[in-house]
Image 1 (cartoon, one colour):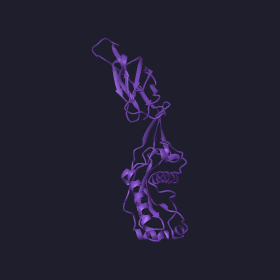
Image 2: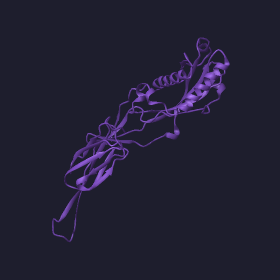
Image 3: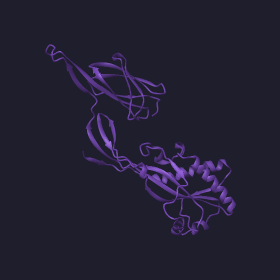
Image 4: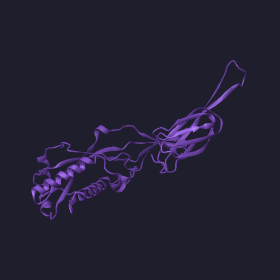
Length: 290
């Protein structure tokens, strides 16, 4: 199989910064922390000396693979009568050093305490606040999970020496992103129908029956595969449900035209004709969501 490489436009680190800025601004203002600046600069002495208002600094200082989420399984995609496999994304842990900056140390501790409470509460970043491509499941297929208080990979003193800043209490905050490679391979035409002939060897010549396996895929209104949808052929007395990839199949189906009824968990229904043998059916449920 020949590989196709189409590297997508990727600005996920900048988008993550903007998403965190939106979250902190919203939650801090709700608790009366007005006009707090959210910055992502290296917290050097020069940067700190230029501050004129309270500030929360999130400095992205470490990027590495989330080894516990490493995935080698290529994902199969089907559509338009063809099938392809996509290389899985690289899961990346983005580690920020989070610090609070005010003129009075008591105010600094109050601000840092509130930031800790916010980041600890939102262990999955709210989708409504995700910026840019982070809100698109084609770029970020997994929820953006986070954790706070993770021990730093290196010494804290080494960190402050490296950025040229004064030692300061900091929170280590990790968000896990997915980096899509845009690497795929075509697997050729999609097989949706299989046929088998069965009969009695002792019977009359030609006394056999041909049975078929046939199916299709169910998608929601946005075109995403819909799992756990109920699918039935009322005339044949057959029923099944869709898998995680939205696909379904029926075994031992007689040739002909069959009424195919699909129902999602929210009660949304659709109906199509399944021709056996044939190319199968693609069913879209308007109003349903994966």
